[in-house]
Amino acid sequence: SYSLSVVRLNVDWCIAIKVAFDNKSFMIVNIYTPYESQQNEDEYLAKFGFLSSFINQSDFNCNFIVGDMNADISDTCSIFGQHLVQFCENNNLDLSSKENLPVDSHTYINESWHTTSWLDYCICTEDAHECLSKAEILYPLATTD
Image (cartoon, rainbow, N blue to C red):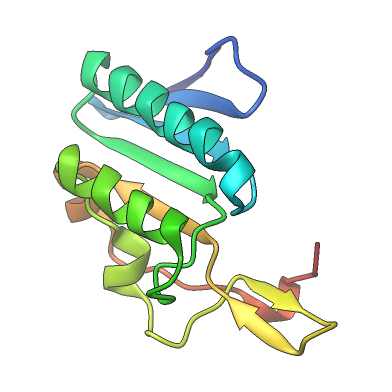
């Protein structure tokens, strides 16, 4: 038997669910952060501050944070990418999608410029990361923004 419950965080950019089955439980947090620009940097950092507080206060050791983080960690010029990596380091989180997917992966296609970016991620606590056996991007099912 299993149970699934919605965790209301009272924000419009983040929702979570708690899943329990076979005496195991975990939480999946889905987020959307603003696109990278200097005018959005304070909001971006505030959202990761909120997440940090939420995860640290969580009763769960097994947490998955997934979603559109609008940060390209493969681009050394991406300030948001640097913030994302720092968030993971500060909170002892694994950037599981980076560790489990090929380096040439992408989750966004810019049709105007014919370029790709990796903007969507799966970030996990250590316990959650150890549960992952496979990660893949289903490109045939993908669409553009």
